[in-house]
Length: 313
Image (cartoon, rainbow, N blue to C red; front, side):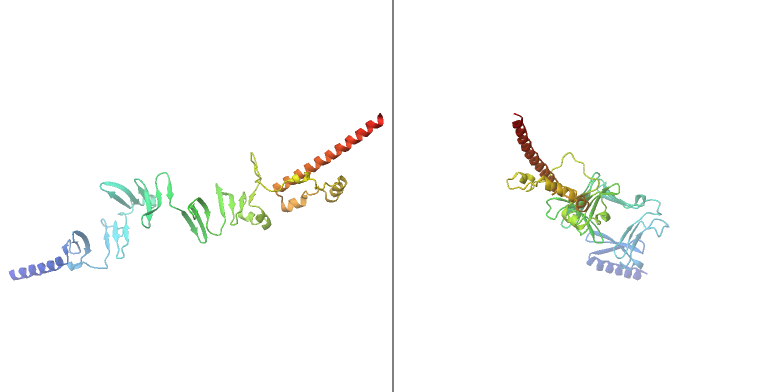
């Protein structure tokens, strides 16, 4: 009997010395699991039949008979699962610093919730901050991108990071709206359409889209309206070489065309619209021509008056 005890003790010492030589020590908990230490770090292994650590084995922490509701589980691929005992409470993972909790991930109300005592910061690539979440705002650095299939949206900065940017970076238009209604549509060729849907924009003639950049349904109400500096105006009417049509010629033109010379017809306006600057210039031209007609008639009236006065003397 003593020989058997001595032999068992000797075998145990040899086994312990062999493991200690590698820096490992084992202590069996219940014959199935064991923990060990290596260079002052502690580990837990499956230890079937006290034969040492087993590989390709997962780990599951359960409470009571709820075998299929693990509180904590790690599989052999490193995937971790956190749960609750029987589903009556949300699962949660709390991050502590000392005895203070600064953040928690939980499944309250069957949602995945990320809660923080202060801010949630997301950093990527050498510590570069990508986003900051706090209780009043969400900040993104440098851009927030949304992509589905071939449509790409970007909110943030332009390519040179010199100006803000809201729009698409793909070959697609953009709606800006409120209350689920599109108020403004931007096409991919600098066109801006207020109060029009993309299907209505498609019905606008291509030549009008090439000539104009802003289309507004129901008109524009403004306290003032300015036209940018342009190089043409109607002052040429008062130049010495300007040919003022005789009134008889103007009368014949009106009878034939049913509008004044140089003024677009109703048919032209209905088909092509008109330039505000050009129509202002034409109207001013007609006013200046009318002024010249009045001045000429005034001279004739004055001459006739003088002639009549000479006849009565």
